[in-house]
Image (cartoon, rainbow, N blue to C red; front, side, top):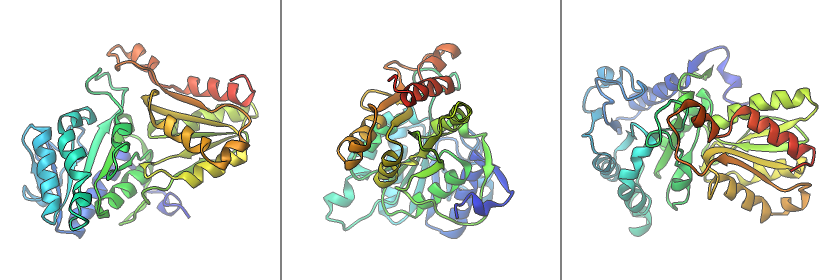
Length: 336
């Protein structure tokens, strides 16, 4: 039974589910603290923190200075002292200012001190395009972080997983990077009550089919599911795999689907070059599932371009539902 099955008819938005996860964690464990720029009285850049400042006070919901490097460093240091900080970046792009603390400190201290310390820090990244925020506020940088040993990287695509993965991340002894697509914040869906964890490193099969496999991440899962409905009307039945976790990656779920369908397409918003699709493709190519392929693997990722401000150009540089339909159709019909 999935967490969606247990949710009955209760619906929350993606943002509400995240807030509920933080609320539960704060109430359950006095070591949990929230940190970030404008997360207090203002409630966060995307209003996800909401009224938690009023509920828990400034010692548990902490407004950090307007310095991503400083805020990330404070959260890493807090984790080393026994707290479980959840640090929010206003935009994922701003993590570029904090890479020293994330990549050289959070990811490596457990290893460098011989396992004597853990770094149970969670960092939340509102990410992705579609809001007209242009090149410096619209990137999908999850593959950067997935490249770093010592970090765990997740991308919830549903409200239920937004809550469950965040709760799992807060309980995890290692640094976990949570990428939340900005366009998903208003998405509503079934969310179980109470405390539960969506396992980090386990993909979800969102739709079953025998003709081809689509492995997708974040908002592309929802686009792939919509595309799959159109394809089903044409007699093309698609397995849609929600990767959920970039690192660690669920090898077995992906390979089992490829062995079943014989065709693979990977859909992700990040730039196609050196992206998540390359890792998934290599994983299949280096396994016995490669022998089951009836066609070349297709990667459908973002263009090698900064995200434009113009809304039509913005849509053009990342995969959209018609792009997924056309590429899947071509793959299923042997034209790609």
